[in-house]
Amino acid sequence: MKKLTAVLLSVSLVASLAGSFSGCAKDAASESSAAGSAAGPASASTAAVTVGSKDFTENLIVAEVYAKALEGRGIKVNRKFNLGSSVIHSALTSGQIDLYPEYTGTGLLTILKHSLVTDPKEVYNIVKSEYKTKFKAAWLDYSPANDSQGLVILKSVADKYNIKTISDLQKNADKIRFASQGEFDKRDDGLPALEKVYGKFNFKSDAIYDNSLKYQILSQDKADLAVAYTTEGQLVDSKFLILEDDKHVWPPYNLAPVVRQSALDKNPKIEKVLNQVSATLDTKTITALNAKVDVDKQEYEEVAKDYYDSIQDKIKG
Image 1: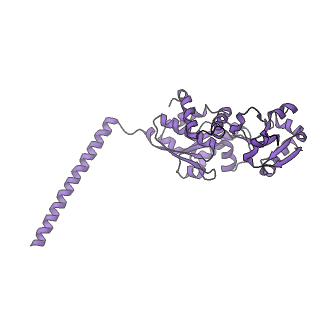
Image 2: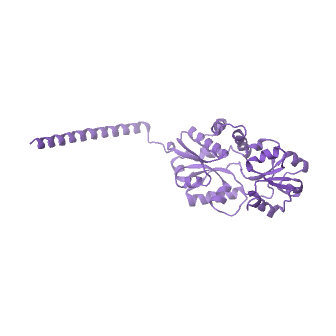
Image 3: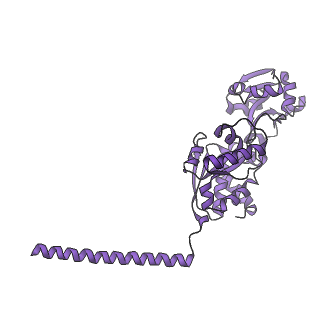
């Protein structure tokens, strides 16, 4: 009898609790529904977006500017920075990140394994089309900023021999001391590519140095010429000059946001906001931003914030 009474009491208690929880759930659902009615349905543009970056100064700065611009237009942002160049594309396609700053030349040659194209618009059209079909990712507008391979020469030497282009350099190579980092002399898109188009470069001397020392080597008058990327921060110094690739051997590396299509579908504001950011970024601007970090030793977050603050009036999401 005691067991039966205990069972009946247990059943009664469970039923009572179930009713209580059911009532709480209905109340919560009712409150949620009321809140939803008052505030309206959740806006797609408020869905969180994960911004990624590669692991070097320029990409970190630009990614942070993207993040600031999106946050400034009410989009929640998660940051996943400092990803290696070899893994960031797979991070995008696997959904670990929603967008990051990329370079048209990298998309063309490294990701798509496409043959060399040197016209900026053609390169962009190829990567835009193929990323859409192969990766369900969109290339937004590309900026005027071009972080391409280049050759940097001491301005004093360039003035002395009237060297402004790589064609001029080839004609005067026997007067020029070249500071190479070794790899450039053998790589298909390095010196061999130049010599196929411009002819042989018979440098006065050709010594190999660590790439990180090139500006120091030039400044100490141990060499006249070195390999560079066209937005390196040290190029703000007027004693250095990037030579014009007048026969267009190297492909363009214009900077642009690459975004998962699913993220654009959830956040319609992304495209307009990031396109407005890209319109402000040219080679001179990017070089100056890089210099603040690599030369002046500021933190990239600080540099990105200051730049975003300076362009806010140009961004209307």
